[in-house]
Length: 441
Image (cartoon, rainbow, N blue to C red):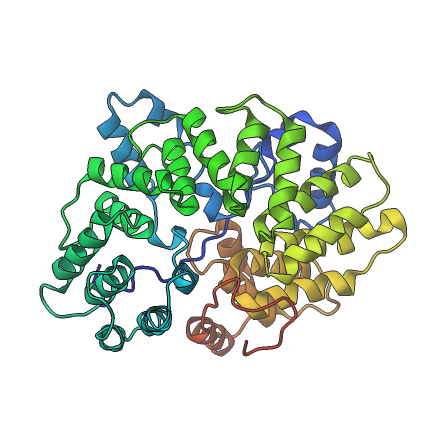
């Protein structure tokens, strides 16, 4: 981490955990998938589907690691496995923002709020200046000063900032304990890597009532970095946070009930918890609830897709791209079932997702649709460009194959132009724009 890294900058996360096991056990659902693929409108991909319809990278850190982790000989090896698998906790999961200072008295609250905004705007020197009149030994002041100091580029600032965080944690400030705990676990220059101390600090923050720390601890007991893989303990920490209104923990707890890990398997309870998280505004939960409702429609259990569409639309308004894909697929592929096909609407939904987020999955779905002639006259150059976006990380074999094939139909000038535009286009974070909002947003 460089001296100027801003420790709590948002790091959006995104793959869709869906229904791979369902594909192998449910004939109706398997028929739906095969229909979509055979019909050359494969916009609803089964790659990455799993037994529980959890969604997004946020969920990735709450699933247990590969089975090999359970055979590792000691807790230290389990933790190393979790760290190598990118399952270690992240600071942006700790829910620290200016609302944390809402109960501080004035003028301290305003000083902290303005200093926090300066820190988040990458101006740590201004943040420190704004805090000069504040009580130097107040734990919230120590917390913000510590983060701002660590963000400065000068030698020794990382160590100096971590010392301020140590002081705040020593005063039993929950967020300071949680932040310091994560820093000890992930390893940070200027701060000694101390796994045991980090674990104790996070559990201490949870004991102090910090719901974000409780959720993070639950994730740690699933992925292994808390020293053991213990779904039962994970469920307790998720339950603590869920009971206090944390939508993400509620969604993770729903996952455990769906799979029966750490708790009795109970899909009805899983549905109740998922819908609770969706009602609290969690976009991934909304997409997951919509997906399960759509599953019932696909299986013929109901002829009314309105509930599924309601939740999928809510998630799509937040640019949850898996909800966008499923909505598009519904209008293109499954509208004929109720006499309401709308290919144009499905394509427009995909186009908006691509335009507003440059999401690779949306780009792949849109490219497939246009490549199969759903947009009318095929624009090879436009389709080539979409496959380029879909393969921006270099790991999409299908996109790469189509790029090679379509490239033969384009002139060298056209190919160079598309490739230059694809490298110059800024990659927007998925949730920066509202669904349908014009650029720039």
